[in-house]
Image 1: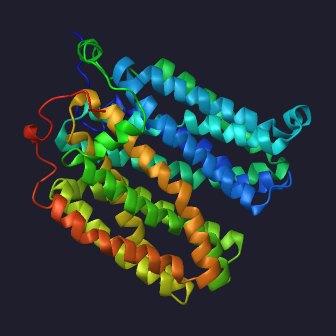
Image 2: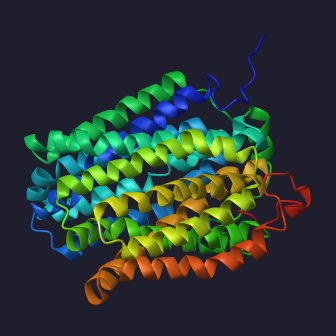
Image 3: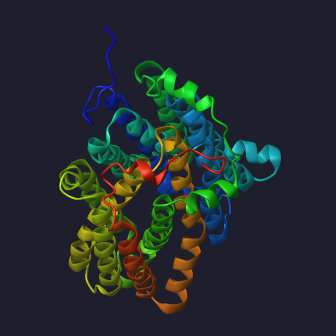
Length: 423
């Protein structure tokens, strides 16, 4: 008898997917904290380092919707393999920055190229989320996405620590280690991960006319009922949260006098809270509250947390403030993705999650510059106050748009058909 795809988020099908996401983020976490130092060893200025970071986000803005759409058409498994392969090649290119730089005349150019390649193919998390939507029903989806978020967080907890240890042998070593992990991931997907899209669903999708990708797809998505507000909320929340992420290390140094080691411990504490939130708390909340209620409540909690973060005078108080911020951030990221999958037809899930990832990537292009300017020109409290006020302005909009409809319940009338304007 042919075994049906499991509907439980703890089913056997999701175990290799959890491992896939964990290994992917472990490799990403290996190199991410070291990238500024690696680029700096080749003479990169602060502006160069900022542009290198922005180049990855800009490339992901372009690549994520394409990978999401391809996964809708041809299946999640082959696109996951393509994405992981691109990630591995990007890390290899990064590790070879010095010898290749001698050939092309600039190691920084090689680093830029490596990050652009990694960004273009870096939609594997989006495709993994679409996989979740394929094999779970609406009741269990938020919990399952939370488990994937927990794998994401675990990778970020262990990755930087391992990367820091390997960097003692040279900055290229973590890059090659990350490339090797991605290669292992490719093999695991090929051997252990079954396809989640049935042939019937792919055949039905291929029979539909699909619009061209581009800014028109984003504009069309923003105009759709429920989808548009969710994407707008993702953008504003992402912008505020990225400001916090990108200036936190400088904030900790200037305001509290923390060194790199102490800051790493604080960020690990945030990672642990995020993992607990997504592995345990979200599943319980999702069974009691509608998605719209969780989104609005989390925005309120994050708003208060950012305002308090701006003003805390000591490390112990900072640790207290970071707890609700980590919890609300974990809930928002997971529930926004879950809600998006419930507002479109099944064959649109991958493409829409790709657009959601692209919107988030767009915030990572502009928000770091805004946060840096606020910190430099107005002081350590300015980024938190600005981000908190931004979310305060978002609260009434989110309440009006989401509270009338319990997103956790099916609403067939929201998307009656897939038109030429549909992503």
